[in-house]
Image 1 (tube, rainbow, N blue to C red):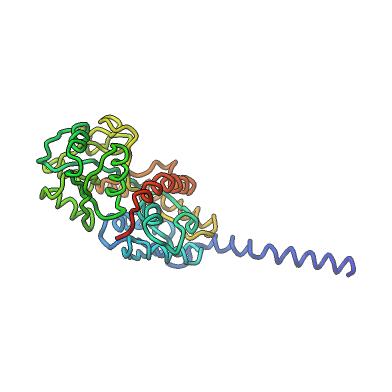
Image 2 (cartoon, rainbow, N blue to C red; image 1 turned 90 degrees about the vertical axis):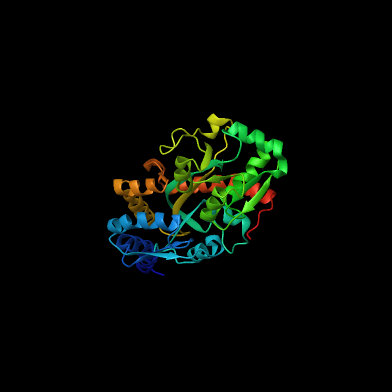
Length: 330
């Protein structure tokens, strides 16, 4: 091969090697050029679906493109998010999920995908802390009295949950290990039936979210003993944290976030992240989420890196608890 031929070959080879990079950058710059589908692993009208619709209304404006919400709550959202994991990593099929779908499901279901490795973190959206609350007739008035009552009543005590692997169930299992005692779990099909059963006195106490509990606390129909968070909630300033009430370090919350399939170009992830950050900065969006009992993460925490670190930390924290209790999907 002559020197001239060799130079031409190297030039052509170099050009061919850069084509995929140029193509990727061009696609990222043009993104989004068609409608985006956000898959929600929950039924339409529920809290996760509502959060998704509130945020995507503003994301559409930032991205200048239609966003379609696709709902599928079968198998606790695992089927829906499995579809996203298998989708092309081009930013047009996304996963809006939460602590249950992207942490717990990996421990209670035999999934065909990896909840951590098969998704690209995009952004944290909001979080809802849990209250420890009891029926109005329960003869205790604060968390220390509740703990004493639980220990003295043994397996006669009952705790309501939204089913196997729900936050109330998993949180209850953790609390059992901390207190060194056992009680009976009473499962229901969802948060609404659980609260209705508590109001009817069908069990003694539960973990409940602000959207379910606040109105009942104010009406005196349910007793709030503590919020399982590091700080008190603005809507319930008189309810102490678990740290203040005598159960230091016991936290339980339900956070929501957005993911893309693994391999999605960083430039596209950055555009999606920017659209969520912009949406969450709008007062109208924050107000609507606040009305649902959702606390928006600080802007410094609305990053892909923070979401990835939180998801891994939550898996490391909760999977051993779930597996040691042999919690399986019903």
